[in-house]
Image (cartoon, rainbow, N blue to C red):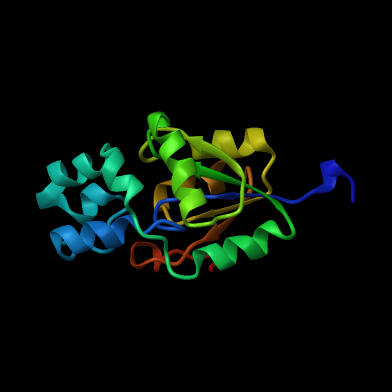
Length: 167
């Protein structure tokens, strides 16, 4: 297999490998609506606090890894070139790299797009990824609509009604 034929897989960070919502729940309690398409819909009465978490570098740096995520990503990386694509702020790229190293995730390109609720599909297309693993309803909709990659749904309470390949 030559370099061009290598499978490329795009992996979301928050709530796929880093337990963002889990940490929000630990701090704020359960959401008002697990079926919300984004954090604001899930925690409508705590929107100010949720927005603050999204832009807090320390909050992101201290997130725990999702149980089993490292082993899963290692399995993917053994057979594919991986990249990490996130809606995190671009200023969080270095702390995200440090987080990945601390939790011993396989190396890969890191893209912190700073677009909450969209914009991942263009990045995934530019990378030439043929598979994208994400939990976000908005990102999954965008990836499917633009047919840039095969979306794999990382199972979470907020996307259980969604049809498709799941892990």
